[in-house]
Length: 112
Image 1 (tube, one colour):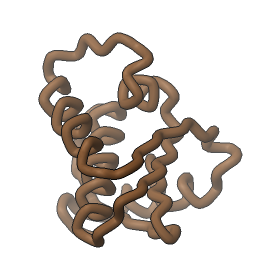
Image 2 (cartoon, one colour):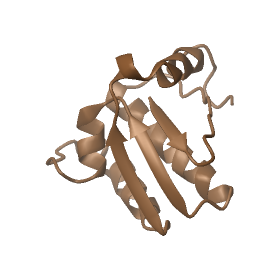
Image 3 (tube, one colour):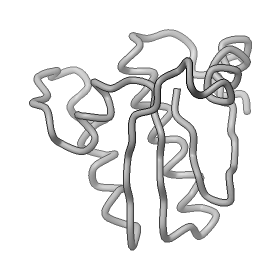
């Protein structure tokens, strides 16, 4: 689950099924689109999946052909910000993110 820090906004979005990495990417994309819609120019994103964060900052090789288009789109969207950073945060140290992810699991696909 990702936490968007742009005046500390929180979003819950029902994504339906998928792998954990697919869900992480979809949440990140949704948060980025939300920030762009709100006119945010400097974005700091925190995620509890170190693997996904490493893929987003391109410090680890990505070899998932199914998810490649989604990662490519996120990387393209990142370029629209004056500054953009991603950081890993352990779930145990971030109760807000953990709580939001549990709430989002109760939502139907596409519901905010």
